[in-house]
Image (cartoon, rainbow, N blue to C red; front, top):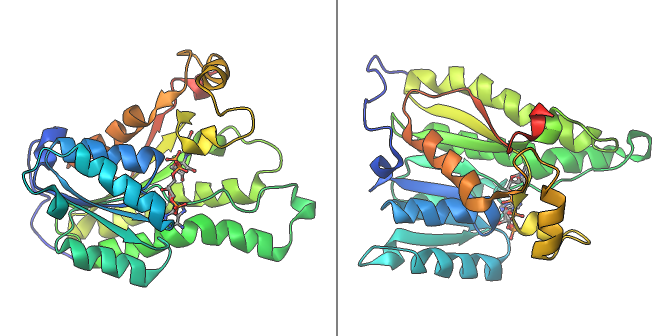
Amino acid sequence: MSTATPIPVRSPLPSALSGATAVLIGGSSGIGLAAGVLLRSVGARVVLVGRDPDRLKAAVSRVRSASPAENPDDAVLGVAGDGGDEQTLAEAFDRAGHVDHVLVTAGDIGGAGPLTGLSADDIRTAFDSRLQTAFTAARAAATRLPAGGSLTFSSGILVVRPAPGMAAPLSVVGAVETLTKALAVEFAPARLRVNTVRFGRIDTPLWRSRPGLDSDEAIAAAGSTTPLGRFGTAQEAAASVLFLMANNYVTGQILTVDGGETLT
Ligand SMILES: NC(=O)c1ccc[n+]([C@@H]2O[C@H](COP(=O)([O-])OP(=O)(O)OC[C@H]3O[C@@H](n4cnc5c(N)ncnc54)[C@H](OP(=O)(O)O)[C@@H]3O)[C@@H](O)[C@H]2O)c1
C-alpha cells in the first residue's frame, strides 16, 4: 500500500466527479440518498447500500429519476444488506466494477440510556451498529480504491455537546472521528483520503420518525433555536460530502455542518 507518486492533481470542483463511482453505505435514505442524487447530477455512478430492500428499491428509483444519463440503469445500482457485513460490501464493490469513493452514513444510535442501566450487550450493540460498519468499509476501501480515492464517514455534534444517557453511542461516534485521523495517515501512502462530516440537525427521515417531529411545522419550530434558524437540508449535508470526495488535498479532517449550532 505505498507509492512514490503523489496524489493526482485534478479539479477540486464537484463537477470533476463526473465519471467517478461512489459506494454509498446508507444510501437508501436521508443524507446518503441526497448524496446519490447530487452525485448523479454531476455525472457520477452510484451504488446504494441499505438493509431494507423496499426502501432501497425506492431510493434507486429516486436517484435514477434524477439521472441525466442515457443509460441510468447502469449508473445507479442497489445492494441490499448490512454495511457491517463484508460479503455485502464485497458484492457492492464487485457490482460497481471500479470504485473511487465511499461514503458511510449507515449506523443506528444503539445502546442509548443511563450507563448504570446498560448491559455489556447494550454497549456491544452500540459498537456493532456504527464502528463495525466503519471498519468494514475502511477495509474494503483500503484494498479496492485507487490513488485519489476517498472514504468519508459521518458523525454528529453531540460528540462535542453530549447529552445524558448517550455515553455508549457517543463514545462510538467519537471513535469514528478518531478512526478518521488514524486511517488518514495510514492510507496516505496509497494516496487515499479519509474524512468525516460532523452533522448538526439535518432534516431527514431520522428526525421525522421521532415523536412530535413528523410535520414541517414541528421541524421548523425545532430548528428555530439554531443560529441560522432552521435545520439543514439533506442536500446541504450531502454537498459537504461531494466537497470532500472532490478535493484531493483534504484528509484527516472533521468537517462540521451544523448551521452554527456548536458555536452557541
Ligand atoms: N440527520 C441528522 O440530523 C444527523 C445528525 C447527526 C448525525 N447524523 C448521522 O448521519 C448519518 C445519516 O443520517 P440520516 O439522517 O441520513 O439517517 P437516515 O435518513 O435514517 O438514513 C440512514 C440510512 O442508513 C441505512 N442504514 C442504517 N444502518 C445500516 C446498516 N447497518 N447497514 C446498511 N445501511 C444502514 C438506512 O437504511 P436501512 O435502515 O434500510 O438499512 C438508511 O438508508 C447517520 O449515521 C446519523 O447518525 C445525522
